[in-house]
Image (cartoon, rainbow, N blue to C red; front, side, top):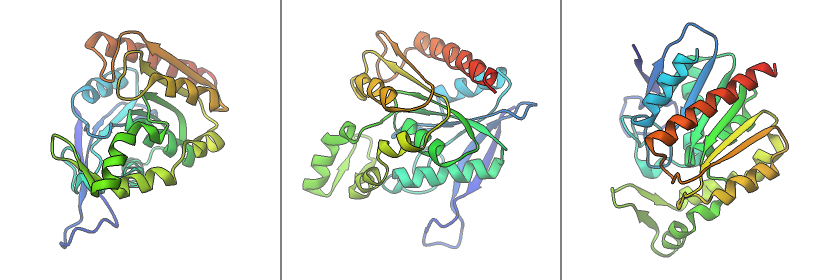
Length: 246
Protein backbone atom coordinates (compact mmCIF):
# COMPACT_ATOMS: atom_id res chain seq x y z
CA UNK A 1 0.00 0.00 0.00
CA UNK A 2 1.24 3.53 -0.72
CA UNK A 3 2.49 5.28 2.41
CA UNK A 4 1.83 8.96 3.16
CA UNK A 5 4.61 11.10 4.62
CA UNK A 6 4.82 14.61 6.09
CA UNK A 7 8.21 16.10 5.25
CA UNK A 8 9.42 19.18 7.17
CA UNK A 9 10.15 22.30 5.12
CA UNK A 10 13.15 23.66 6.95
CA UNK A 11 13.67 27.41 6.78
CA UNK A 12 10.12 28.27 5.70
CA UNK A 13 8.70 31.08 7.85
CA UNK A 14 5.11 30.58 9.06
CA UNK A 15 4.69 32.96 11.98
CA UNK A 16 4.00 30.00 14.27
CA UNK A 17 6.12 27.60 16.30
CA UNK A 18 5.18 24.61 14.15
CA UNK A 19 7.33 23.42 11.24
CA UNK A 20 5.43 23.40 7.91
CA UNK A 21 5.39 20.15 5.97
CA UNK A 22 5.16 18.79 2.46
CA UNK A 23 2.68 16.00 1.75
CA UNK A 24 4.30 13.07 -0.07
CA UNK A 25 3.27 9.54 -1.01
CA UNK A 26 5.73 6.67 -1.42
CA UNK A 27 4.78 3.70 -3.59
CA UNK A 28 7.31 1.24 -2.25
CA UNK A 29 9.12 -1.38 -4.28
CA UNK A 30 11.71 -3.92 -3.22
CA UNK A 31 14.51 -2.37 -5.23
CA UNK A 32 17.13 0.39 -5.16
CA UNK A 33 15.56 2.19 -8.14
CA UNK A 34 13.71 5.45 -7.48
CA UNK A 35 11.49 7.68 -9.61
CA UNK A 36 10.35 11.06 -8.25
CA UNK A 37 7.51 13.01 -9.87
CA UNK A 38 7.16 16.82 -10.04
CA UNK A 39 3.67 18.17 -10.78
CA UNK A 40 2.79 21.24 -12.86
CA UNK A 41 2.23 24.83 -11.82
CA UNK A 42 -1.38 24.57 -10.64
CA UNK A 43 -1.52 20.80 -10.26
CA UNK A 44 -0.81 18.47 -7.35
CA UNK A 45 0.21 14.88 -6.64
CA UNK A 46 -3.28 13.42 -7.24
CA UNK A 47 -4.97 12.28 -10.45
CA UNK A 48 -2.59 11.15 -13.18
CA UNK A 49 0.31 10.97 -10.71
CA UNK A 50 -1.35 8.12 -8.85
CA UNK A 51 -1.46 6.06 -12.04
CA UNK A 52 2.09 7.08 -12.97
CA UNK A 53 3.38 5.95 -9.59
CA UNK A 54 1.46 2.66 -9.80
CA UNK A 55 3.00 2.03 -13.21
CA UNK A 56 6.45 2.94 -11.89
CA UNK A 57 6.06 0.47 -9.03
CA UNK A 58 5.02 -2.23 -11.52
CA UNK A 59 8.26 -1.50 -13.37
CA UNK A 60 10.25 -2.01 -10.15
CA UNK A 61 10.69 1.57 -9.02
CA UNK A 62 10.16 3.14 -5.64
CA UNK A 63 7.90 5.96 -6.80
CA UNK A 64 7.34 9.24 -4.97
CA UNK A 65 4.76 11.94 -5.68
CA UNK A 66 4.40 15.06 -3.58
CA UNK A 67 2.66 18.41 -3.36
CA UNK A 68 4.85 21.47 -3.66
CA UNK A 69 4.28 24.13 -0.99
CA UNK A 70 1.00 25.97 -1.47
CA UNK A 71 -0.42 23.08 -3.50
CA UNK A 72 -2.63 20.15 -2.58
CA UNK A 73 -2.11 19.01 1.00
CA UNK A 74 1.19 20.79 1.61
CA UNK A 75 1.65 23.85 3.80
CA UNK A 76 2.21 27.35 2.51
CA UNK A 77 0.67 29.82 0.10
CA UNK A 78 0.63 29.33 -3.65
CA UNK A 79 2.06 32.82 -4.23
CA UNK A 80 5.24 31.68 -2.41
CA UNK A 81 5.61 28.60 -4.61
CA UNK A 82 8.21 30.02 -7.00
CA UNK A 83 10.67 27.98 -9.04
CA UNK A 84 13.30 28.36 -6.31
CA UNK A 85 10.81 27.24 -3.68
CA UNK A 86 9.83 24.18 -5.71
CA UNK A 87 13.47 23.24 -6.23
CA UNK A 88 13.95 23.47 -2.48
CA UNK A 89 10.83 21.36 -1.89
CA UNK A 90 12.13 18.69 -4.26
CA UNK A 91 15.46 18.64 -2.41
CA UNK A 92 13.64 18.19 0.91
CA UNK A 93 11.69 15.25 -0.51
CA UNK A 94 14.72 13.54 -2.05
CA UNK A 95 16.85 14.05 1.06
CA UNK A 96 14.04 12.64 3.21
CA UNK A 97 13.97 9.34 1.30
CA UNK A 98 17.74 9.52 0.64
CA UNK A 99 18.15 7.35 -2.47
CA UNK A 100 21.72 6.92 -3.71
CA UNK A 101 20.44 7.70 -7.21
CA UNK A 102 17.10 8.45 -8.81
CA UNK A 103 15.21 9.43 -11.96
CA UNK A 104 13.04 12.55 -12.26
CA UNK A 105 9.80 13.05 -14.16
CA UNK A 106 8.28 16.51 -14.44
CA UNK A 107 5.20 17.76 -16.25
CA UNK A 108 4.80 21.32 -17.60
CA UNK A 109 6.25 23.70 -14.96
CA UNK A 110 7.30 20.57 -13.09
CA UNK A 111 9.37 19.73 -16.16
CA UNK A 112 11.35 22.93 -15.65
CA UNK A 113 11.78 22.04 -11.99
CA UNK A 114 13.01 18.55 -12.91
CA UNK A 115 15.46 19.77 -15.56
CA UNK A 116 17.08 22.36 -13.31
CA UNK A 117 17.19 19.96 -10.37
CA UNK A 118 18.81 17.29 -12.54
CA UNK A 119 21.43 19.79 -13.69
CA UNK A 120 22.38 20.50 -10.07
CA UNK A 121 22.20 17.03 -8.45
CA UNK A 122 24.65 14.36 -9.55
CA UNK A 123 22.42 11.68 -7.99
CA UNK A 124 19.99 12.04 -10.90
CA UNK A 125 20.53 9.31 -13.51
CA UNK A 126 17.99 10.55 -16.09
CA UNK A 127 15.19 13.08 -16.44
CA UNK A 128 11.92 12.68 -18.34
CA UNK A 129 9.43 15.47 -19.01
CA UNK A 130 6.00 16.04 -20.50
CA UNK A 131 5.39 19.45 -22.12
CA UNK A 132 8.23 21.03 -20.12
CA UNK A 133 8.44 24.80 -19.72
CA UNK A 134 11.80 25.76 -21.24
CA UNK A 135 11.25 29.45 -22.06
CA UNK A 136 9.95 32.37 -20.02
CA UNK A 137 7.77 33.41 -22.96
CA UNK A 138 5.28 30.75 -21.84
CA UNK A 139 4.18 33.17 -19.10
CA UNK A 140 4.31 36.45 -21.03
CA UNK A 141 0.56 37.03 -20.69
CA UNK A 142 0.77 36.81 -16.91
CA UNK A 143 3.97 38.84 -16.75
CA UNK A 144 2.34 41.79 -18.50
CA UNK A 145 -0.48 41.85 -15.94
CA UNK A 146 1.89 41.46 -12.98
CA UNK A 147 4.03 44.33 -14.29
CA UNK A 148 0.94 46.50 -14.59
CA UNK A 149 -1.10 45.47 -11.55
CA UNK A 150 1.36 43.82 -9.17
CA UNK A 151 -0.11 40.32 -9.29
CA UNK A 152 -2.20 37.88 -11.32
CA UNK A 153 -5.02 35.81 -9.85
CA UNK A 154 -6.13 32.64 -11.61
CA UNK A 155 -9.83 31.78 -11.82
CA UNK A 156 -9.32 29.26 -9.00
CA UNK A 157 -7.87 31.89 -6.67
CA UNK A 158 -4.14 31.12 -6.84
CA UNK A 159 -1.93 34.19 -7.16
CA UNK A 160 1.50 34.92 -8.60
CA UNK A 161 3.48 38.14 -8.25
CA UNK A 162 6.86 39.55 -9.30
CA UNK A 163 8.70 36.90 -7.26
CA UNK A 164 7.52 34.22 -9.67
CA UNK A 165 9.14 36.01 -12.62
CA UNK A 166 12.24 37.06 -10.69
CA UNK A 167 12.91 33.39 -9.95
CA UNK A 168 12.38 32.43 -13.59
CA UNK A 169 15.00 34.97 -14.65
CA UNK A 170 17.49 33.46 -12.21
CA UNK A 171 17.09 30.03 -13.80
CA UNK A 172 17.49 30.34 -17.57
CA UNK A 173 17.37 27.22 -19.70
CA UNK A 174 20.95 27.99 -20.74
CA UNK A 175 22.02 26.72 -17.30
CA UNK A 176 20.47 23.33 -18.08
CA UNK A 177 22.18 23.24 -21.47
CA UNK A 178 25.54 23.99 -19.87
CA UNK A 179 25.31 21.57 -16.95
CA UNK A 180 23.12 18.61 -17.92
CA UNK A 181 25.00 15.50 -19.06
CA UNK A 182 22.47 12.68 -18.48
CA UNK A 183 19.81 11.21 -20.78
CA UNK A 184 16.69 13.33 -21.29
CA UNK A 185 13.26 12.39 -22.62
CA UNK A 186 10.73 15.01 -23.75
CA UNK A 187 7.14 14.07 -24.58
CA UNK A 188 4.79 16.74 -25.92
CA UNK A 189 1.23 16.85 -27.19
CA UNK A 190 1.07 18.07 -30.77
CA UNK A 191 -2.10 20.08 -30.04
CA UNK A 192 -0.81 21.71 -26.84
CA UNK A 193 -2.05 25.32 -26.66
CA UNK A 194 -0.46 26.08 -23.28
CA UNK A 195 3.21 25.19 -23.84
CA UNK A 196 4.22 25.40 -27.49
CA UNK A 197 5.50 22.03 -28.80
CA UNK A 198 8.07 23.95 -30.83
CA UNK A 199 9.74 24.89 -27.54
CA UNK A 200 10.45 21.23 -26.79
CA UNK A 201 12.07 20.61 -30.17
CA UNK A 202 14.15 23.77 -29.73
CA UNK A 203 15.18 22.60 -26.24
CA UNK A 204 16.16 19.17 -27.59
CA UNK A 205 18.34 20.77 -30.27
CA UNK A 206 20.14 22.87 -27.66
CA UNK A 207 20.84 20.08 -25.17
CA UNK A 208 24.26 18.49 -25.54
CA UNK A 209 23.37 15.04 -24.23
CA UNK A 210 21.30 12.04 -25.36
CA UNK A 211 17.76 13.32 -25.96
CA UNK A 212 14.57 11.54 -26.95
CA UNK A 213 11.82 13.94 -28.08
CA UNK A 214 8.41 12.70 -29.19
CA UNK A 215 5.33 14.55 -30.40
CA UNK A 216 1.97 12.93 -29.56
CA UNK A 217 -0.35 13.90 -32.39
CA UNK A 218 -3.75 15.19 -31.29
CA UNK A 219 -2.87 15.42 -27.59
CA UNK A 220 -3.23 18.75 -25.79
CA UNK A 221 -1.56 20.05 -22.66
CA UNK A 222 -3.53 17.45 -20.73
CA UNK A 223 -3.29 14.03 -22.34
CA UNK A 224 -6.31 11.84 -22.94
CA UNK A 225 -6.50 8.51 -21.08
CA UNK A 226 -5.25 6.72 -24.19
CA UNK A 227 -2.47 9.27 -24.67
CA UNK A 228 -1.42 8.88 -21.05
CA UNK A 229 -1.11 5.10 -21.43
CA UNK A 230 0.98 5.56 -24.59
CA UNK A 231 3.15 8.02 -22.69
CA UNK A 232 3.75 5.52 -19.89
CA UNK A 233 4.66 2.78 -22.34
CA UNK A 234 7.17 5.05 -24.06
CA UNK A 235 8.53 6.37 -20.75
CA UNK A 236 9.27 2.99 -19.26
CA UNK A 237 10.57 1.64 -22.54
CA UNK A 238 13.00 4.56 -22.61
CA UNK A 239 14.00 3.94 -18.98
CA UNK A 240 14.84 0.34 -19.88
CA UNK A 241 17.13 1.72 -22.58
CA UNK A 242 18.72 4.11 -20.06
CA UNK A 243 19.36 1.21 -17.66
CA UNK A 244 21.01 -0.69 -20.48
CA UNK A 245 23.53 2.11 -21.01
CA UNK A 246 25.08 1.67 -17.57
